[in-house]
Length: 392
Image (cartoon, rainbow, N blue to C red):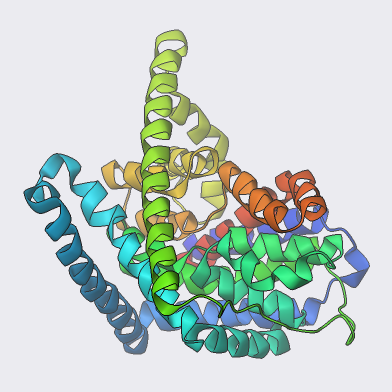
């Protein structure tokens, strides 16, 4: 029954993407088929094999070590406060972002990261049938983040037609920043985080190839990556440390605001309608949860968490998932995969603002197709969760 539901879920995702397609005649079905097969193959390896267990275990171990190093700096500055139970989330989940950001800056400055991202992107471009720039951007987004990635391609931003700009923005929204992967692993199962990272990379190409298909000419398919080398090492390091701190504080502030607002709205709805706002959204998202392979009796609870991610952000949804008691381990795994992306309303403002800072006209264009960005990125999350459901 689970497999049948998952097959129906795949059909629904592809149908929803097809309905929103800009040019149905240009859809490259063979490339999509290859990428779907790759998704299933990679999901099977990561979830059901010893090799996958080794990869995920190694990935999780690396971040465990990095977070342990980060805690040395956190403990030095905040002392015993970092051990307090009431504020453990801020110190153990958000503050390590500062250290991870610093490491990314070092890898970026030494040109190790741009080299790796560029050539992984070139390999992917042979598989997905898209341009080199689109493939580079997808890999870079998964490491640098949804706003920072556009700095690395700022020379091309002003020259990109709308359809290519959409693909770049959709990739940025469908992935997550490597700087906060450690934070996710403290909140949900590391296996689900790794699976989502891999599946979302291909899922972004699949959905974009249906919603926004196009051909890139040889003349258009150039790849010039902007690597900032004018700064001294310590200038760069200070900048990345401050960037990481800003991200941590911004995420913390958003959590305070969103959790408080959702609590208030839930209270109002409970008093007026006898049901909370999140429960109401759960009923709206329940059909989506059902076609993802989640059992009927768990769809409302799962749908409520999925909806929270869309209207708030993935951190708020992960906190709610951690408090859930009526969901089975399989359902928790599927929902966890769904949550690992930036597909929410606030991301539209972040991405549009990042592009606008580099090119005002292009930023306005991004803002115009904001709802379609959320639509496409949400389908990517549903696709990844559905594929993973075959193997959990």
